[in-house]
Amino acid sequence: MSDNVVRLSIDRLVLRQPTLADVKAIAHVVGDKRVAVNLRRVPHPYSLDDAISFVNTVAGTVDTVFLVERERTAVGLVGVSWEDENAPELGYCFGVDHWGKGFATEAARAVIDYAFEEFAIDELLSGARVLNPASRHVLEKCGFQWTGVELHRFLALGSSTPVDRFKLERGVWSSIKSWHNSTRR
Image (cartoon, rainbow, N blue to C red):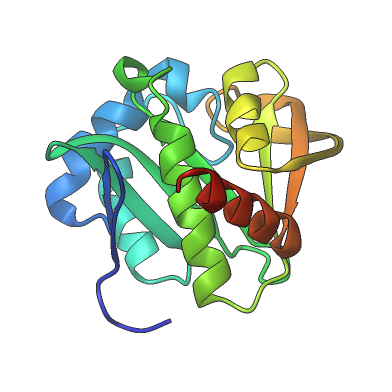
């Protein structure tokens, strides 16, 4: 990955790498328990120190993380985790005030495009808590296909919970993208 700052501008949103100037906004989004309980690696309560640690950690890793902004206001985060380099995983979260507006789908599609264009990967993985149908719907709208249910530990819950697992293959994404582009003409 290059040292250049990556910025993705899409219809209604701007995606950019988070900085320490964003920690209050990140803590506001992720600190809401309704958000935190749907994220595996996030404690609750989520503090400013947690947000600082997050920004410092993603700055020094190969993870591809973007702060999502609408009209210069942080509305969420989206990115690809390379925790397992052979199984990159798409993840996202959005502030409760921004749920149900299509932002997650729009941002996820931009990052999927970026991941398949910039990296030699054949597929992306993702997951959503079984109790989070809205997140599952986002993945399905992006072309992810359900692969089964696994049990994952969630820090904010302090326990494990069932997670629907999904996979998106490069060829499927290319087909969806081609179809989408042909219908826009």
